[in-house]
Image (cartoon, rainbow over all chains, first blue to last red; front, side, top):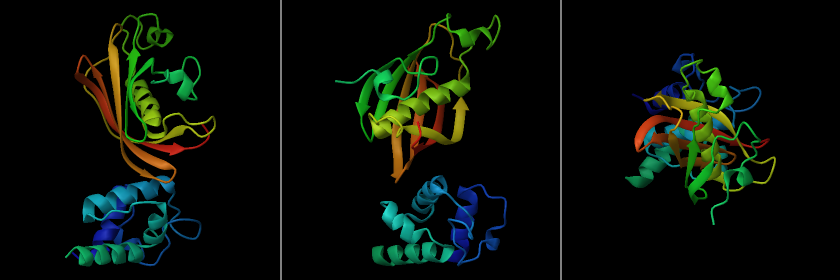
Length: 86
Length: 139
C-alpha cells in the first residue's frame, strides 16, 4: 500500500475515527480550527502510532509540531527517516 | 525518602485511592498500595451485602499513581488529569481485606500529555490493567 494511504489508515485506527481514511486530505491541517481539530491527546496517540506502525520516533514536542501538521508532512518524515536508516 | 501520596497528589479526602507509595522513580515508574476495608462507605452501595471495590476506581487509583510516576511531586494546579483509558481489563474482584499494589510505568511523554501502563495486583495476581492517558494542568 502507498505510504500516504498507510499514514491515513494509521490516523483513523489510532484515533478511532469514524471517517474513511481516504477522506483525510493530504494537506488538511490535523490540528486547530479550520482543520480536523485534533488536540494534544490526539498528538500523543499519533506519536505512538508513528512508532508502532512505521518505527519512527518523534522525540519531543518541537519535532511533533513540525511532523504532525498534515498527512503529507507525516509521510515525508517517515520517508526521510526510513531513507536515513537504509 | 518517598513522600506520602497525600503530599504529592492534589486529591482530597474520600478521593485519594493510594494509601502509601512503595517505589518512586519520577518520570519513569511508581508503585503504590491501596488497602481496601469493609468500612469504606462506597462499598455499602457496591453492592449491598456483596462488597466489591469498583473496577472504575481501580482505574482512578492507577491514574493517581500514574500521575506520581510521571510528575513526581507537582505544584498545585499543575497535576495530571485523566484524558483517556484504553485496553482496560478487570480479571478478579477486589474485596475487603485486599491490599492492592498499583504499578504505573510511563510509556511515552509528549509535552503536556503522557501515556502510562497501569497494573493493579493483589498478592501478585493481576486484578486490573489499562493504558491511561494523562494530561497536565488544572488538578
